[in-house]
Image 1 (cartoon, rainbow, N blue to C red):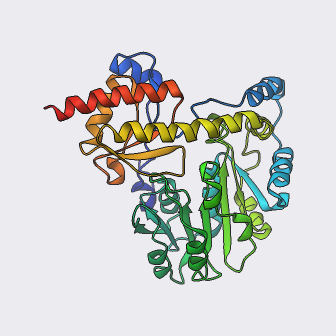
Image 2: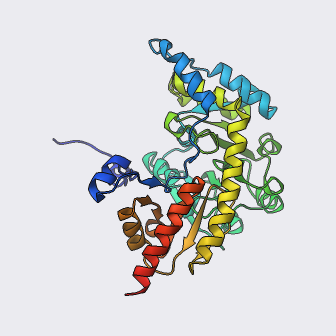
Length: 367
């Protein structure tokens, strides 16, 4: 074949998918593995969502509602915003894609941090935009440095708050000081995938900023706190004018029927939501104490995951844990060779993780 492929596409590194759990078990000869690597909800999906999905299976011959009308109505009522200020996507990932395709032309600049969610930079490169990447400072976004790199070609600034993979947040006062430095031609995107886990007193309220002179867009997802990552549904909160542009690049029927039904039912299942919050808070506290006792440094977090400096090879530790049926995320790809990232699990999963971590660290340190 003699294909004409743009250089920016040739040079893209595809997002590295993990192996299916069943394949990892086959490869490593283990059964009953636990996955604590992808920041999913270990409690599982909402029972109300599962029941609603089962009841809707007879409608699969129909196209889904392209406007997500009933889901948008419920989310808008819960947030106190207008339906026209919401844009739904196949996960919040797709809303990121809408923003880049709508506002970034070849040669335009987008500012992100490193490390942060890898998809931002991938989508900018696919659009032939220019990635301006700012290193984190003290494990958090360096808003002062970001403000200093804004140019007339800057179109978007992505800030995952809390940050993935560090779990840090920035203060309201810090954000507002930063926002005052951002020109009206730039959209600031607050990716709030983990906002449900943030202590109430540390949360920003994106609704305070979406109608300001400098545009702010908030991103939310049903994948984490609501436990339906497999359905892929998220949304953006923004000024109606920005939403109108995103709808111009949105494919019709982009959010499938089961995702809409499941997400709507999640909003009505407060018991599951509160159980998730309680499990996460208790798990973070218990794991921090136990893992610190193993001689590791556990970083503070405002998410359902946390970073751990194990003071040895994170990649080797990851491999050892795999043989014990425990899956965590090594952080070498983010530049943190001695770090792993751990998602909070159920009580039983947390206990198994600590036992496996203790055994593996003793073996590595005893060499």
